[in-house]
Length: 502
Ligand SMILES: Cc1cc2nc3c(=O)[nH]c(=O)nc-3n(C[C@H](O)[C@H](O)[C@H](O)COP(=O)(O)O)c2cc1C
Image (cartoon, rainbow, N blue to C red; front, side, top):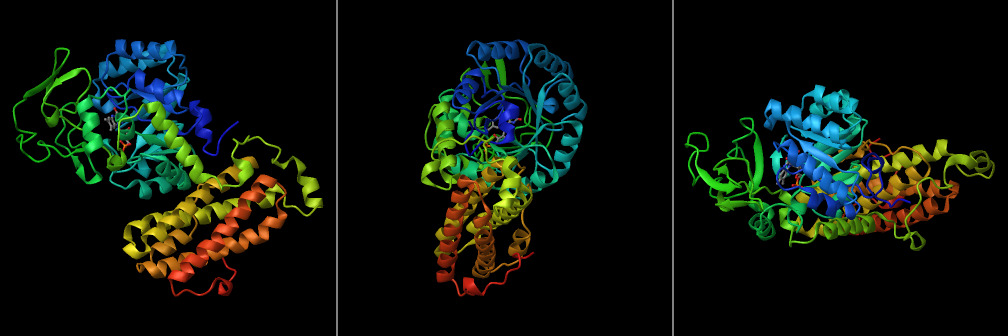
């Protein structure tokens, strides 16, 4: 049985929900991974620069708690060669199921891990790097937007980076950067991601190994408090940027990060913690926490309390599921993906006037591409719209996200592969700077979708898909009226039959 959140990446990782806890160095230990896994998510141990004894101990701790599917995160560029080799060997020896890699990833390492039977996930901030990683054998790509907490690899907002990587690669793509809740996850799924990676939101949990000081600062912060800086640099390649909460270091009150002599500001079991190092405050540390790297993603404003990680993952999943479901009463229960909706009845179907999968799947995917285009347009428009139109734009965005989820489920139900493309309407709509005019253009697209649905519905035999698409049609008709009421647009009945912008 699988929920509407289920994506192929869940099978690859071995989790119920595509909710992935980032492999955060220092912060993500076995206690956090256990809590996330128990809720149905997937967790990475953050093992950058950690000794192999700790990797072994943490893996053993997970297994002693019955966790068999988990990952280990390593960062080659921030780890001395001898230690990295030993870490990799340890992962292979103890049979770590999944390894995630980040920052200047040596492609030969991807191959080596794959050859050892390990699932490899690579995090990236650019399409070019994503392609190279896929070519080297990465089975999962993590698209990291500039909103991310911790080290930030690229320079694109997630909403601009993600769709390109989804469209131009073939492996599952996860989205990372600024995600904190179920609405964020649902939005990422609508853009074609197979799941979301959560960092900051899972630091502010009881099980994270971060110091309480860091957790509380996250709870108290708002999104404007984060800053990208290269001031925290010791242990990392020069110029690597991190997103942190602004503090005395980023305000320049602790001197020049690159010329000030090394100053000890903390201690972890006898290990000195230096000013301007990449260490963040951990449970095991003492010192001047205010001056350490207080990693935080841009979503920090929506982190309002410290919860258990199990509870946080369950809440994210529940929120996302409710946002993606069409709300047809009989569909509250989880669905089975390999259901009788598959195309076994194809000959009968055609005889009775129903569409076969060869007709239905392309039609559903065409609708998915159009809805994804609408979701992207509305997401961008929400940040640009005048106050008076904001709530309308956000409501339509929510609907588009929902229909992307519903259409994806329909395609899976028919054992098809959901399209990874975004419809042409997106690019065309984004050339229209005037927001009311852009909404009017989108309304034409909504009209096109409504007419497609009207034609398609009588040909659909599967009751679940039929019920979902009937609700989708009603929602489109209502949204069209809402927008028409707000704007001087041509009425719905006037719209021509051609695909919007197609
Ligand atoms: C405290 C912290 C430590 C991190 N450490 C690592 C790390 O060791 N390896 C890694 O691949 N990514 C690391 N990241 C980045 C995450 O993989 C991910 O991109 C980021 O957390 C997503 O953004 P969010 O924090 O807004 O959710 C870290 C992030 C944070 C917040």
